[in-house]
Amino acid sequence: MPDLGRSEILVYAVVAVALLLVGARAIRGEPATDSSFAADSGSRGGGSSFSVGGQAGDLVVDVTGAVRRPGVYRMPAGSRVDDAVTRAGGPAARAELEAVNLAARLADGQQVVVPEQVPGGGAATAAAAAEGGPISLGTATASQLEEIDGIGPVTAGDIVEFRDEHGGLSSVEQLDQVPGIGPATMEALRERLQP
Image 1 (cartoon, rainbow, N blue to C red):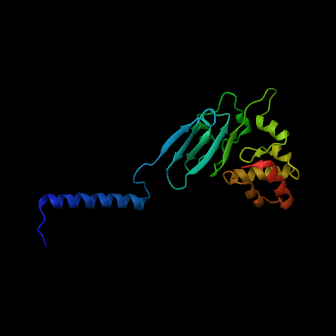
Image 2 (image 1 turned 30 degrees about the horizontal axis):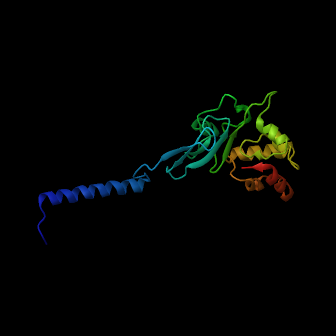
Image 3 (image 1 turned 90 degrees about the vertical axis):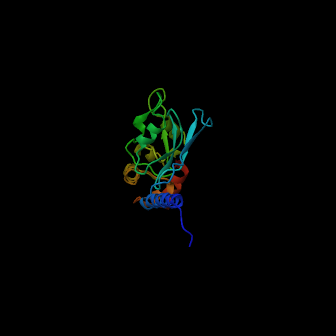
């Protein structure tokens, strides 16, 4: 076996310490490097931001409507709608925040729609719902849900409660778990709601 010089032993010791540090980070679940980046594009007028990387359990949400920087954002697990609106630059001057449950937990893949105020009161999403357009499942109020065939005040309230208890909903199919919603009601919900 060849004799190792003092400098070679020092190099091996440094490599061993580095490997131990990397191994300790891996065991604790910390990332070795930060791979986050943001890319802006003008596809939505105000630009959008998309973040890649982050910790396991992060959520990706689409914030749109009356916010300063609509786009797709990566949020920490357990975040609220208010956090997503803040991340999107905050509400625009024309935002109708009373139509959004800012305290609701975010779900992965959720779209957060901040409606605009319309002349004469009410939110733009309420006007769209009256015209028969799809309603956002993430922001629909009980009164908007009641406009759907087969949904009464009790079921509408149950849907809003279920959504809030489960931190939002990422698909209409999740409503099948709400008591009182049968196959016919699910069909009506699929036609009138969007995630």
